[in-house]
Image (cartoon, rainbow, N blue to C red):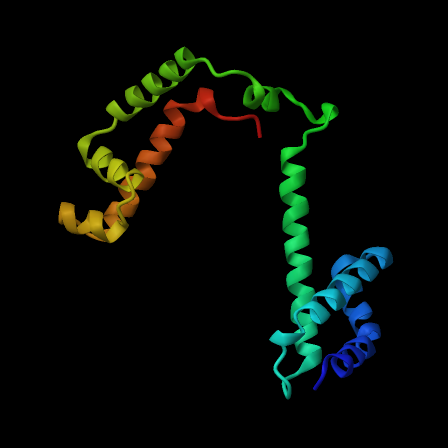
Length: 170
């Protein structure tokens, strides 16, 4: 199949692509843009299409991937842009310069909370925090995996209770 025949076949699929695009975008103009992007990519990557395969399926895959990539791009862009009215007290903490003295107080409180845990709870909790899996902790301490999970859970609850002052306003 030559490029002209391929372009004709692709163009004939435009109406069914528009219906499919509306399912993604829920907006007629955005759907038209998505169809246009899909058709452009299909024509551009004509050499990647294998004759005898499902053209409509290939086009739908291009459309789905284009939509997902565009969505991710918009989300990423919007996460970097903060409008003036969106700046809350919580966001001010993120944008303000950091005070290392404040971090020292927080770490002191965390270490103090950890020191209140008995070794039965401290060791599995700290191992889990360092990235060990439950079964690895179980093998190392020679205790059942259920006991490991329980001790980590109890340690978390104790830490939350001790560090309740740092709980963010939900």
